[in-house]
Length: 227
Image (cartoon, rainbow, N blue to C red):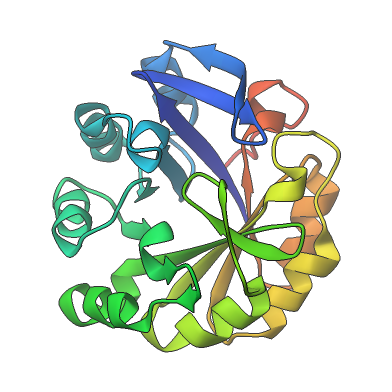
């Protein structure tokens, strides 16, 4: 399944290259809500919250009221996750809060799972040059995505794996890396990072993996499936 992404920064929808350079930005929030109305899943990320540079909470709530959004970005506490679920998020995506300088913080993972239930949570595992990265992809953690997924599996009902090396480059994704992560867990996997064509989406779908698409949609290279 193709899952369109909405990334928010400064009250706008944006698309970034490698999480840094703004390639696309638009104020056409209502237009994109209308376009995505028929989609069964949407991924919504508050980049300002993720970077600790503010929040787009009101806009997140507005979009969640209209679309079936799994929401991430700056969820560092159970209270923040609970608030997002309360305003309409279908799932809360937890990332950096699950890791510390040495690896997975299982205490934090258990705290989220015990409070909210694994079924309402997704763990975001982002990988760059073979290692997990956190804090807006700035900080490396000394473990692989495969090891991270194996450790986090008891606490989360689903994983979001982002192959940062390809993010925003429109050069295709790394299917082998995604496959390795999927093989490490019995949980559902959603993949992101450079997915550009329906051939890639279909190949992942055949393996039971959902595909998050951003840049390819906003540039018009890939069209939304009609439902």
